[in-house]
Image (cartoon, rainbow, N blue to C red; front, side, top):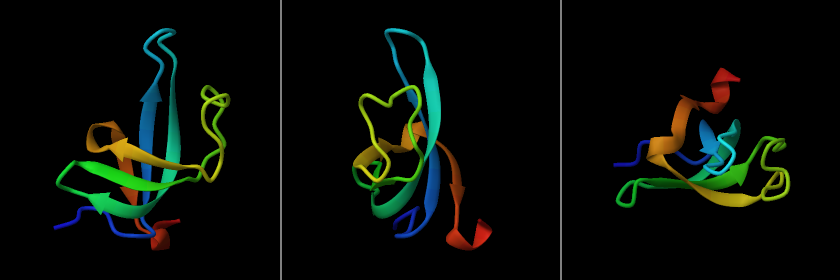
Length: 76
């Protein structure tokens, strides 16, 4: 059973292992792949630390272990 539904928002943490910097960003869920424990979706934050690697609206996969917060659309 999926933990996250299409349209949900998750806040995840991304770390740069080389510099030690991290950034928390929001993702709009398109699909939850519980078997692989990843969420697929579109970046809903403008990256600051990772601005050279990620862009607003980019499709990415986020591991369950990086998720820090979960909200339904009605909670915004």
